[in-house]
Image (cartoon, rainbow, N blue to C red):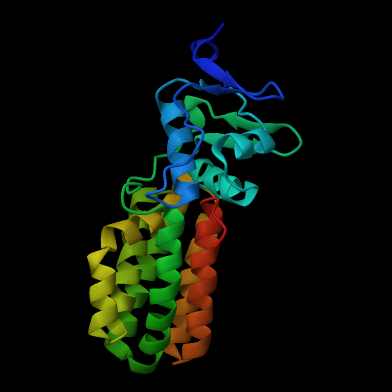
Length: 248
């Protein structure tokens, strides 16, 4: 019997068992999906649920925590983005092996990765629209330089270099929006936003798509097409979130 098996204490009428550390009701001080994700995360990282362990069914988990299946699926999306679990259609949800895990989201005490992407949709789409109307040739040159650096890092397989260039593009675009309040709001949470930009790159997939999306935004800014630039930024942020396993 594994260590994970020995920590199972609670059982439902259907026979599903849960680690003893799981409370039957999610904490009320934070959003439900985040609190459920935190409970599952603790069990995995503390070894209550070992690599390869199968989680109880969504029905049993929903009943145990007293939450909707929609909230549970949102919690799963956070854990899957972190690489802690693998959702296998038709089979269930399993704890990932150590080697399959990606870097954990470092700002869970402040906001989820989903929160970051939602905030970026609100701030950066509008900033792109404003930047398209206000950017000058020097601003375009600066943006183009970040995109070229991003492309070079992609060709070299340099994930850290890509993350740095990606952050530089978004920093510059926010500055070029010409709205000091938008830029200030972004700067106040910049580290969280930059982490959300880097998160999808840790999977090592869609790297060329990332470059193409930035090139498309650059060209729309270059030609002053504000509405289209905003739409392209929205599509980019949603695509980045999707690559991280999150739907926004």
